Image (tube, rainbow, N blue to C red; front, side, top):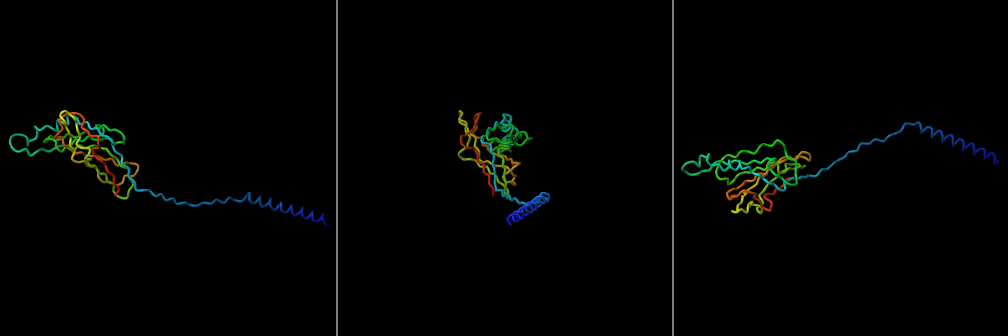
Length: 222
């Protein structure tokens, strides 16, 4: 009896082993099944604006420009008797190449025009000085971006100790362009600042400055 049971157990083992081998062989030749799914990615960007600016600006105004600005002989209103009604005044436009900047530094536009020749006129009490490419903005926003410039009352007038003591007044400052579509992060929007100079009390050559900032820039994302 025990011999018969042993014989059956052996045959059962052989059959089980053969079945397992067949299954293993079948699995080995079956085609592989790959899972494939699509994934949607949503990126939420913030509304952001980055303002680059010149922290310090030194403006060398050529003597030739000053001479033309102060030349009154060609102004008809100053020739002969009669009231002096004043003559047109020209702007002094200073390209980046003629302006000395210190850090932080930004890349400036190229191909800028030469300084404009001012029109001879009356004593320069309100001469616009254009500082080109002194700020830049990168921004992502839903609406237009605005940049404004304002004279810092604590930083003007600019003073030269002399003697005699001299000063340059700056009644106001303007940023251009003041409003523009958001430029994105790659190509910044460059801009100018125009300072209106009052040279009435400028008597000596040299640097006119103040330890306080002369103007402030404000970037707004309305």
